[in-house]
Amino acid sequence: MKLASLSRSILRSAAVAAFALSVSACATKPGDTGAKDAAYEVNDPLEVPNRFVFAANEAIDTIALRPAAEVYTVVVPDPIRDVIHNFIDNLMAPLYIANNLLQGNFEGAQIATGRFLTNTILGAGGIADVATQAGIPNRPEDFGQTLAVWGVDNGPYLVLPLLGPSNLRDTVGYGVDTVADPVRVWGYATHHKGALTGRAAANAVDRRSHVLKEVDDLRRSSLDFYATVRSLHQQQRKAEVENKPVSGPEFPDFTSAPKQ
Amino acid sequence: MMLTRRLFVACAALLAVSSGVGPSLISPARAQSADPGASAFIQKLGNDAIGTFSNKSLPKEQALQQFRTLLHKGFDVPYIGRWVLGRYWNQATEAQQTEYQKLFEQLIVGTYAERFLEYSGETFKIAGSQPEGETDTMVTTQIVRPSGPPVNVNWRVRKKDADYKIIDVVVENVSMGVTQRQEFASVVQQNGGKIDGLIQALRQKVGKAG
Image: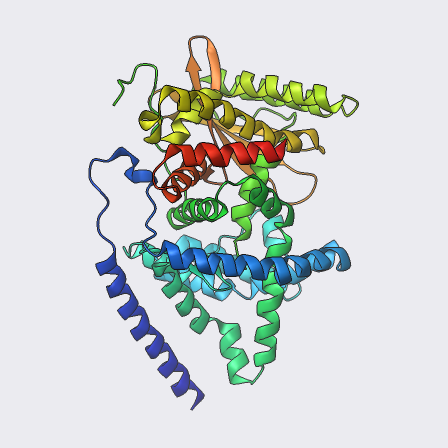
């Protein structure tokens, strides 16, 4: 029964994914030819609605998330915050393993499995990140990255309500990861949906609490915070997909270059 | 939730880059083809920065002046300013170019000076260097902070005559030059393709920062 409904929901998601991807394939056209600035152009045809959602997210951040994260860092001591962070992240490991496998990255899958076992067993159920201390860094792999490895283009930039910067491909990936998430499957199967909501809230506050000062600084120093975040997100994502530093842009020698 | 953590750690690092003294760990395989002078230049610049900003007894005015001196010693600010403006540089009049460059420098000082003045014991070590493009060297460093994981920062260094200058900083895979270039392009586009719109926005930002 449960299995049937689960597989139905996976099928449904897959259908949605396939549809969305075919739309994205139509929506993305190859980059402009010739133009030197093309490398710095951003694929953001939905900029107007995106800016609207971005502003809404900013408002929510100002009213709720940032204050919550601030209280969290003041009230909850450092070691406890680490425990919460590690525990949430360790439960994501099965997804990292699966995505590594789907990408054909067996070494990555092996490392992710090693991390999961190490932290679950030696790290007391994932509350201590023993693996990182032992020199095995965490490298999250999501389904958006898997799609990228399979050759799916970014698609247009999207700002999602509450979730923030993304693109069409990663949005589909996020949907797939959400459905496949073992914790979510467990939560639905055992009617522990409250735990899932709790995890989502804790995760949001945890992640926000790590960047309090940084976001404040960025907001203060940006001329156009929306554009800054878009650029940061796209560069960061590109590096995550490629799992290596992205080759740098061209830096011409202006003194000898002829004026165009 | 809104923004990923690593994304901001990246920016944090640039803002917080205060560098430090550490062992030089140039990897031999890569160092062979990279210009060793570039690493030495970064090492010295970092040491100078730490030497300057760990001295908390300096009056603010003087510390700010020191920051400016170090900034121009280490970075080719006019080059970065021009590169960041991209294709709009050629569309700007000479007067606009001059004002833009002045404002750009003030923006950099306004953004980063405060962070350097707040130096709180960060250290750095050079992790390697490799050739980048035809003319440049990318020097890889690791910034170790008093709390939180270390941050990888790469410095794109160009040699001009006998001088080395930084022309871009890449923090956790995010190029500060590219970020600013895309941001400025967006501001110009929001203002109907007019460079004056960007200059106006810069004036406001710089004026506010004091």
